[in-house]
Length: 291
Image 1 (tube, rainbow, N blue to C red):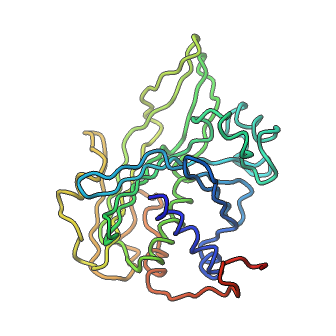
Image 2: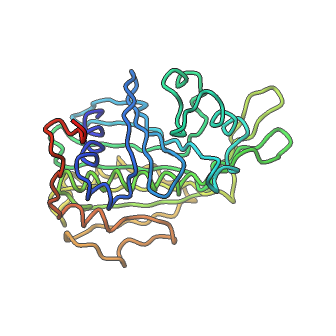
């Protein structure tokens, strides 16, 4: 799983036109025991973090669970949406000018900070197909013991912005387009601090929990795995959830097929990039522009 995701990001560093189309300003791999990457988007002074939390192989399938983080910059409108603790870290000695933690400070930062969503990737050993599952709250709300708002970054919007680029890279590298997609939403949660220093999670009707699953495969109109396996990959639906599901019969993007609840759901780039044949313009065999 690490090699797969690393290869996707690497393809963007090699092919300038691909990087420009996806709006990727920079990508940096974190060389640590736990695979992670920092990503910067064009026009966004903040930075994203993608970290592999768990990977396993079960029944011939390869699963990877990734956490999505967002590190705000004092220069963007999301700065005030993060907690005092998070903002103090960004402007302190544990972060550098790239708006990401220094390598030495990564283990000192509590893992729940800056978290905005999760991405699960499932594939088979030959990568004939690949399913991406994105989960996030519309607002990552934290309250103090008195009910005052501490934090409320837009988790879904931030998580989707990063996932959209990664899925575009997969479409480009695999030459596969979406064959199935499902989107669901249901009342979400909020985190409230307790006076004893612990926290509790409680339902929040004004918040929404979104889940998007996109299956990429080689043959439009024919899902490369059984319907039963596809259903197993989807999050369990509660009685309050609203679910949208589509099956795509061709390799072309149709706007009327991919709208759901006015949320960003599918990107036209996932079809377009599966068809292009961009090549690297770098002159050196190692991929370095300055050798």
